[in-house]
Length: 494
Image (cartoon, rainbow, N blue to C red; front, side, top):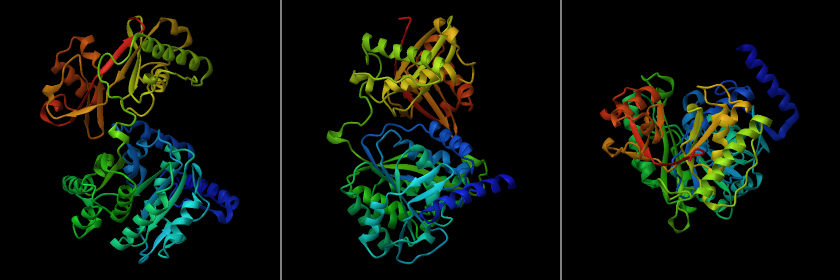
């Protein structure tokens, strides 16, 4: 371990010599998160892959994400970044605060040209940074505000990996009194109102060091305040000891307020958990939440989500095109190891939809992988899931080129998921179901019940016990969350 940290530090020294005075080297690499580029990228990609973000109705203006060590909060923070992974984001404005330094009446803006992490240089948007400093004398260049500051640094590698190529604006509030927070909100609005392709992010953890059940209760109260989308209600409506509920309350106030000024009109909580869920130690926990401040799409339409649901979404020509994409993709990938470049003209196939691709060989399952959330165009989701079903399903060896002629392909195009409170709403054969309890989850497609002849009880008991690894009766006792969806299922055998 000592050798490894020494090696990481040595690499950073080399980078520091090359970067000289125009870049800051990360302080927390190898301590709060992996110092190895390969390990760090693998960990972050895993978090981003597993984050299932529901439908986003409109444009994300602001985000909230936690900032603890990645082993504790990285999986929750990934939900915030996943919400904007497919959007065009040229600049991400990260608003943190100073944990270890009190800078009365001041707000710090990072002004080096880049911030160097194990993933490389994160370039700084110097134009926006300079405009913020010029806005008011209390907004200053203060390098000490970014030394060993996890509220800012922990967001940078996630932003580098999720929003590749974006520039960053790094802000650290030295004093979270209301006048400072209002000043920053006004400055952000004034500087960003004429900008395009940006997103703001407030860095905060939730309650600190309470027993598990007490923490969940306190955080639920804080989340209810956030969901009101009223910055003053959040700031003044929380307990006097605001840091016990949320350490970065000033950062959240500033980003929420600026988001409202910039047109956001609602909050969507993306994920909540705490360190008891991620570490298993529940005596004293820290809470974590990801959320989005969203501006409704013009005309109230949903951005990136189809309104259609169930059977009849596609005609035969469209189905054949999707199946051809899946087969051509697998053949190309097996031959070259590269993804097939695909383009379609049909707008129906460009809708953002989740999908599963299932492979059968001589009537036996040979692979099945899918993406529940609607985070990209359907035709590209089918392409990527076809590769995954052929090469990444852990239950089977990789498909070989020699097998391809014997494989039948089936596609399940998914409607958005809907959480239900009453399990009697589940219609066997019509609904696919996802159950979730803590970090455990499992999904069955609608056709599973049809193919097995299961009753609803058999279907749900198997989903809970065998797919999700939770008690078989959790769906009946209220021990898990239940989501239903429909799917249009079609295959080459039709």
